[in-house]
Length: 136
Image 1: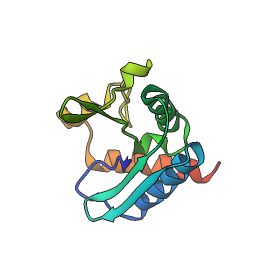
Image 2: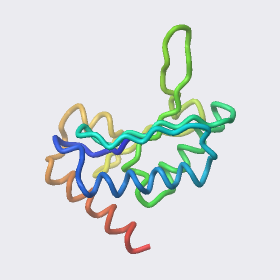
Image 3: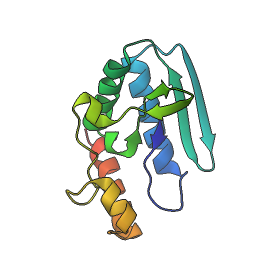
Image 4: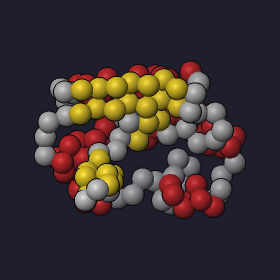
């Protein structure tokens, strides 16, 4: 699990708030066999080992990303061994659409690559998500 925080600052009060909520959501959904939580300058990282079918776990993680008030700011990857490498399971393997941009309806990757939105627009969108979550 990582925090989706576009821009140069990857660790601040906002990212730690999302990280805390994300860890709680994972711990409430699964009983981790192992976890390693890292609060580093490059951003929060959480590693969990859970018991379950690969695609069921991915679907459940997508449920957090899609349903939690801060879920849009969380990236919950499920990793699969393919030969000698480890790769993330794609959302489409469990019937999920690509993540949408924080500001428009285009796929997030398109806007990210094209730098469609300014850092201040993105920061304001993140603040709105966090304020919404606080008011629930």
